[in-house]
Amino acid sequence: MLPRSELYDRLIKSLTGADALWSRSGARLEPGELACRAGCFGCCVGLFAIGLPEALALRRAVAELPDSARASVLARATRAVARSAATFPGDAASGILDPDRRDADEAAWLEVVRGVPCPALDLPSGRCAVYAARPTTCRTYGLALRAGDGVALPACELNLAGAAPERVLVTAIDAARLAAVDQALLEAASEAGLPAGAETTVAHALTGTAFAAL
Ligand code: SF4
Image (cartoon, rainbow, N blue to C red):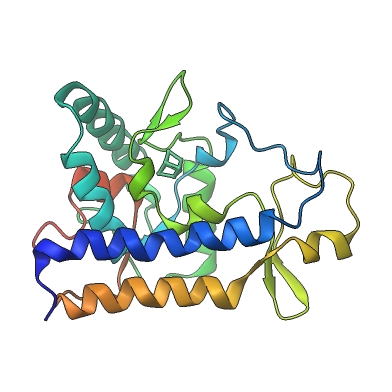
């Protein structure tokens, strides 16, 4: 059994595996192909699903923020949770997403939260308040995701502008390797005796409603 006191460090270590995937793909980029820069935070607008291990890492990170920063993050997270409650495809009170949610229900929810800034996004600086504990999606967004010989998820429209599909594929992150990072996160949570499979959102993770009983 992995002691809870060691879980956070283990989760952060596993999360950095996603950074390595970004670096590996980023090294294939030519000058001018990457538009990502400090202060560009378009990828931090809109809520999305994260796993339990990522939620635990975020909870710990927000708890360690200075009081005023933590209060700001929690206020934004509370507003985001309230805004998405009516269409949330799962248990809106706990923030646990329904694993069997219908695509149509997910789409309706995503439409509502599409313009909601992530509660961890500090504006106008554009910095992430929980950067060291950010989820894998945040660590890999921007480049395409490759599954086999095809693009499973496109790159940010600002990156690789006008590039041929082959070029996008060459610089894409391997979905199988990213799945291995997710698996490492799940194993860490599982070894700590936690039910690893459920999903929530950054907003619910930050407010603590998700997995509050753990
Ligand atoms: S957790 Fe941080 S990096 Fe991820 S969407 Fe929120 S502000 Fe952006």
